[in-house]
Length: 172
Image (cartoon, rainbow, N blue to C red):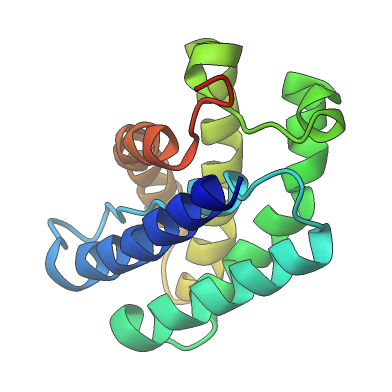
């Protein structure tokens, strides 16, 4: 159990660094924002309470804000609703089993369709909050909508990779 916990923490920290690199060096267009932050918070082990999930999400968001984005609090503000809705979303899509048995969400166990649905919903929530706060009256609605949709598609692919790194198979 300790080995799995250490593996998760190390992978999580490395993915935070990867997100910082994405933010700093991979700006292809103003219409696309690459992010794996929502799926990172979504994949926090189910045995972790909502309180600690909120703390982890807030610290993760602030770290990325400070070292990459420049607008302190923007990622943190968008990650907190993700952390709050994580349990509800997991129970709605996967049922109560992940929390009852304290198991992780894996593509192998739950299938690509359910995991993809969860990724789309959690990433859409994050991107909507992030972009509305970031553009706050300075950009037209169509720009925000285009950015959210394009970013959602681009981030989905990265999130699939990240979920496979963060979610180890409990039967190993």
